[in-house]
Length: 333
Image (cartoon, rainbow, N blue to C red; front, side, top):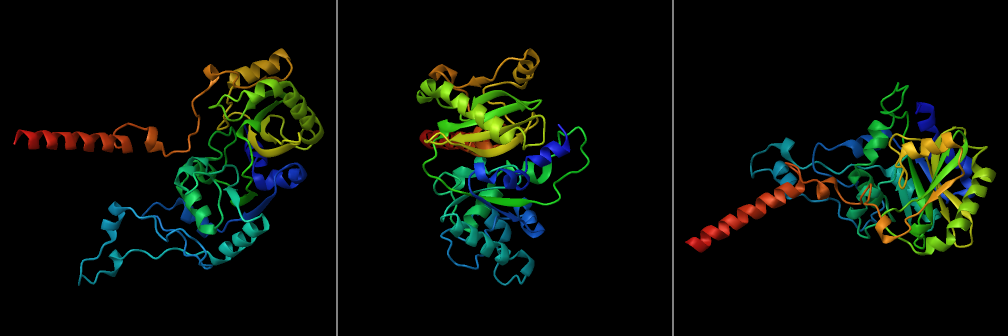
């Protein structure tokens, strides 16, 4: 995988070429001050100070432990210990507000490569649906996945000459509440030939796909030949599509071949082997409850499934044990 292949998968690079066969998107270049804000973890998280005063979110995500660090004792006179003021990005906020209105009032955000799917748990709806600048900022700042975009996009490139992208972009994509997760698929292209298609959501068995599989494969193969193969310049890559109820295929995203891209119901070795053997397109779906795979990227914090020392669960177990010991002592007394 080379840097130029990774760069082609940035949404600001591919969307203008595929706008007519994708979902409506408005892209904004981010000022460096906002990028620094997303990466800043030096203190309590402050939501931006809204200039439109239309955000329902509180200005602060409170953390009692952080609060203690910034409390000022009465009469101390130490101004350096006062809680910092929230940042403000008025020009960017007004641009985003205008774009949200143009896209129907609700959007889901992503940066150059990634969407903050792992942070959906923090939103009031449990989704990536955003109607304001502060909701977008909250999702972006809370996502560990976006650290990939901001710091690690080129880590696995064989010709790695840069640590980060030259510019970062925020793509606002029109929100559709009626989209069906079973109709999204990841397609794998090797040597400019479509070699594999995988159900995108691998944690669920969708019986409806059993009867539609052959027709879906024909639609996606035809779409690839007519709209993708001659337009996307890389020889090896993957792309995600959504098939609508009236059998139109829409491009959702492009991803590099290998690296951080998930092969879903395949392994990369299987996909490489299919190229060598010259077989037709291998279309895989979860065909029974037994075929369900655990989530490869879950929409919960890392601490939720990390039980190692210092993790969130480690602290819960330790406090529970302390409480049990306290109760035992009380009973004994």
